[in-house]
Length: 198
Image (cartoon, rainbow, N blue to C red; front, side, top):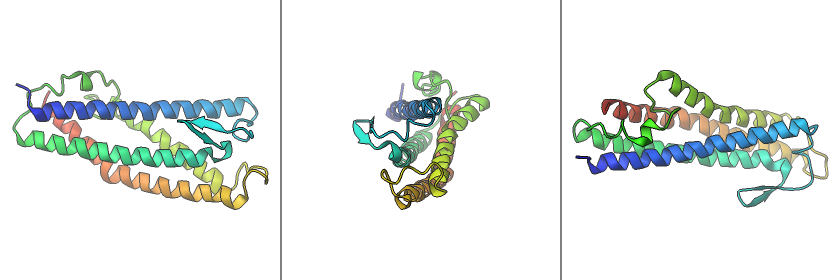
C-alpha cells in the first residue's frame, strides 16, 4: 500500500519538474533573443520599443535587470521546493523503507535529465544546464558594471546602467550561496530517498 507521504513526495516531484522545465524554457528563449540580437547587428536590445515579458512591458535596455530579478525569484522557488522535498523525504524515511512506488513513478522515470536520476552523467548534464543561468547572469552583470555596450544617453544614464550591474551582482551572490547552502544538499537528500526505493 502506498503511504500518504509517498503520494505527497510524488506530487512535490511533479511540481519541481514543472518548475525546472519552465526555467530551462526561459533560458532557451533568452538565448534565442541573444542570437537574434547578434543576427540583427546588435539592434534588438537597443531598439526603442519595449519587450512584452509575462504580460509586462520591459524597456529593452533594462532586460538584464528583469532577468536578474526573475532569476532571483527562481532561486528562491528552487530553495523552497528543495526544502519541501527534503522534509517530505525525511518523513518518508522515518516511516520505514519505501515501497518502491516513488522510484518507479512517472514523476521520476519520465524525468530524463534530473537531479534524482540514477545515472551520474544525467545528473551532471542537469546541473550543467542549470549553471547556464548563472553564467548568463554573470555576463550581464559584467556588461553593466563595466559599462560595455552603454546605451545612448537619452535612454538611460550611465549611473542607472551601472546600478543594474550592482543589483545583478547581489542577486548572483545570493543565488550562488543559496545553491551551495540549500539547493544542492536538498536534492542530494531527495536523490537518496528515491535511490532507497529502487
